[in-house]
Length: 355
Image (cartoon, rainbow, N blue to C red; front, side):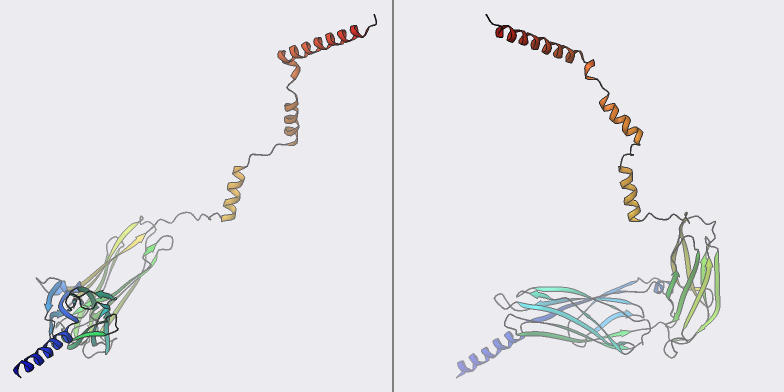
């Protein structure tokens, strides 16, 4: 009886182990890259934050995620069947961050791949944390699924958490636009920049500056106030500055830098952006040759000039003028032929004379 019970339990354990085999997420690494502005506000802090997450439910992404951060997850998926087991085909990985983008989800999906028994595959899933995001905890769902040749499905899922934080004071240049970026004859340009308060505190006495020594630009707006990002509307936490200018005709062709600087309390540099304006010489207005005109020109250039009527006549005459009689050889030949002809005539007449 004991043997029967032990055999029965063994069968159950083996069956359980077999049913557990299939797809499994075995590693999760992350890599965070921060917005440039982050380096100006936090001293002695790298722009990179990396780490690993236990591949289990309720794991927490232990990273400083801020508005505008870029996070990359490297996920390792494995076919846990032993040698001789089925190949799992059409495997794909899906990751979803729920309700992080103004109530909407952010989702990324890998391309399809096949996994032989015992093989694994790593895939990167990248997310950009929205600028206008709440500082709270978000659900992160990670799934992998595929099927074998018998259309048996295999699927695994992990439910994790990630926390987005906000700094007390977080001012950013969120947009810059230079229109146009290349000038030539028409040298009128418009520079536009947008600054935003991404932090939880209202901000006063802020400044936004446009500066370029080579282009003679020095424009600054001071004492700007922006409301808290947690409570204000888009307009109340955003400021847009525009400047129209004209590049002097005397400025030589080249690439000229422009700087957009954002100051907290009117003097503490919080963010800066650099872009370039390309100036080209204004050349003469040359009308391009049309294709048919170009072909005609090339064709005409390839044809020799026509002869005039007089040139034609003289040419024919020229072909006829060279006298064959002035050739000594030809005179000798003709003379010889005449002599032979005369001899033949004499011989013929002499034979024809009666006896």
